[in-house]
Image (cartoon, rainbow, N blue to C red; front, side):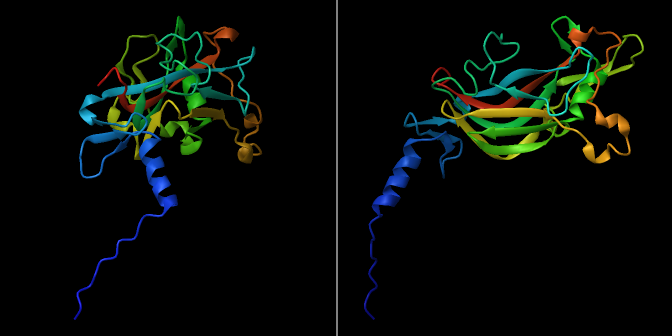
Length: 250
């Protein structure tokens, strides 16, 4: 029997172009057969996962009620868009919707943190609950929808819990102070300075139930017992948990 000969077929030009494009553009990605090693196609450089920083990319937005303390259904806030004049306490985005030049990030978990105090204003717990239970969160990375769902599904991993001496309050519980409770993405997402980050929270109505519960016809009212109309707002942070790589860290 004649020995079988292996025939080498050249890679077609189109396939070669696709391979080159995948290797020279896009976000950082793991290297097969090399655990803990990542490839940065934009800089044509290998680096180790241990050389990256544990990182949280975050931005803060406000749900502001009208003069009567009423929120409007359909009202929404967007993260990482209005970053001008914000201090690091509110955002670490230096430019709208993107990482700064030279940075890449491996996003593994995503959460929302609801602030119980903003500046000198205490935000009432009832206000926080009102907004959490009536908002819907959507996150898109590079115009691709990564996740969506009611806000309650996305704890941040930060918060307060314990006894308090505050009048008429026995337990303080804001957020979920446990990183184990943060939603973990089924597939880690890679970002660099060329990728858009679009996070949005929208206040949605319950029209289907308004016939049975007439009060649902109007927008939810924020508690104003200890607040002026200008203080009727809720502040929330979107936090992208992961590992950050930049020239300054390696």
